[in-house]
Structures are given as structure tokens and as C-alpha cells.
Amino acid sequence: MTTPMLPLGDPQLEERLQPKLDDVEVRLRRAVADGDDLVDPPSGHLAAAGGKRLRPLLTLLTGELGRPGDEVVTAAVAVELTHLSTLYHDDVMDSASLRRGAPAAHEVWGNSVAILTGDLLLARASRLVASLGAEAVRRHAVTFERLCLGQLHETLGPADGEDRVAHYLQVLADKTGSLIAAAARYGADFSGAGQETADLLARYGEKVGVAFQLADDVIDLSADAATTGKTPGTDLREGVDTMPVLLLRRRAATGTLDPGGRTLLERLAGDLDSDETLRAVVADLRNHEVVAEARALAEQWAHDAVAELEPLPASPVKDALVAFADLVVDRLA
Image (cartoon, rainbow, N blue to C red; front, side, top):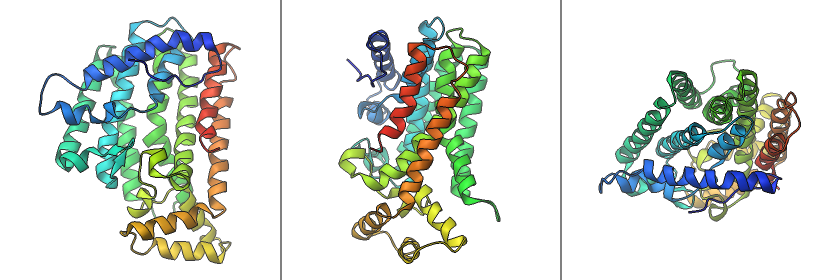
């Protein structure tokens, strides 16, 4: 079983990491199934649907800054299991019908099974992390706490008077950035690369995570379900404001919103249950200049992530980390 390797700019590095990434895939499939004929189909559903495996790849990559061993591979599997667990929960909360081009788990087995499956995968991730020691358990707990806080803050919305864009960026840092930060840190932690290196990689990973989600906000409006594996405009339908909508609202608050933008906000406040209506709103929003502004924000966060790598000495791994950040925004091309 070979997992596609993202281009990292160095064939020798890619050749070194490919067997480890394949090992992650084998262990991941093993972790989501344990011979229970009733539970294995939902627990293996999203793992079987594929994915880019960005987080485990990042753990394996940062592990190359030290002396990587089996603990780095274990950490990579735990990070991806944690990520998968959150997807089951996210899809229930968002009422998403597709995930990675396949029906979302709750569409097949119902909300209760999807939620419990997410919990099950988190438990299995925690069991793996426990094998890595007490500090790994603490970091995993802190990361999952941030994941939950990010989701809660997104659900509850900003406090009165709080800047909506700043609130959203903090949500992204918690909900997406924290796990990518953990993925980047784990490679350094478990290869003996040193505390300073682990800390800067965590900062890098968090900013990459924010850039990744900002890019997703744009892609969600610019691509179809066959390309993204998700239904375009799901967040809009659920009343979740992504960055392009927040930029519309900021312009409205400052009196700089154009008539087309005002019309969009009115339509967003209406009924988006109809697929036809949702598609029309998505099409109009993707043609508004706030999408280009959101794209520029994603590029800036990726640039800031790369800046965190400055203290690292020149090496193929550092170049690959720069390429990894660039890949986040290259998806916007």
C-alpha cells in the first residue's frame, strides 16, 4: 500500500519518507479496525476514503531534523487518528453530506453512530499517545482542548464588541492550527531535535494551519464537490461565516460595502435550504473581491509561517518545510 507523497523538492528526502508514510497508512488502517463487524465499517469509513495525510507527513518530515525512530511514526498515526475523529464530529455539526468524495458517516449510519465513532477514534489516538510518555499525553490533551474550544467559540460566536475577523482567526488557530502545530512539534520531540526546534516548529505549524483553513474558505467557493470532496457552501448554509463573508460584514460595518456585497449579505440572511439557491449565492460570492482579499490573507499567513523557520540551518528538510507551507496556498492557483 503506497500513500502518494506530496512533492517536497528533494527526491532523496521523499524516497526516505515514503516507506514511513506507507507504514503510517498500514498502522492507521489497523488502528481504525479491530475485527468488530458492526463497528469496523463506520470506524474505517474516513480512513478508507483517503486524504492527503498532511499531518502525519509533517510529523515524519520534522522528525528528520533529529534521529527519527519508531516513536515518530507512532506519533504520526496518533495525529491523523485525532484529525479523523474531529471530522466525524464536524460533519454532524455542519450537516455535511460529503467528506473526501464519499457520503459523510452520519449520512450512512446516523448522527449517534458518527459521534460515537469520532469518540472511539480519539480514544484509540489517546492510547497510542500514552505509549509515548506522560509529556506526550499532556500535549495531546492540551491540543484536543484547543480543538474543542475552537469549535465552541465558532459555535457561540464572538462576544459583543469583539472584532469578528480576529475572533475567526483565533478559532482557526485553535480548531485547525493547534493539531498541525502538534504534528510539527511531535517530529522534533520524538527525534531528539531539541526544545527550541520543537517550539519554533509548533509556531510554524499553527500558522500553516490558519493559512490552510483560509485557503479552504476560498476553495470551498471556487471548486465543485467532485474536486474538493465536500459540498460547496456547507458553512454558508449552516450560518457559519467564513473569511470572505466576514470581510463582507467588515466592509458593511465601515460603510465601504458595494451594492453587490449588500445584496449578498441580504441573501445570506435568507433561506439557503434549496441547493439551487445555495449554488447561486456561492457563485456570486466567489466573484466578489473579498475572495481575493481572503486569498491574500492565506498567502500572508503562509509567509509568516515560513518566517518562523529562519533560525533553522539550511537543509533539505528546511526547504521541504518551506515547500509544505507553499503547497497550502498553491492549492488556490
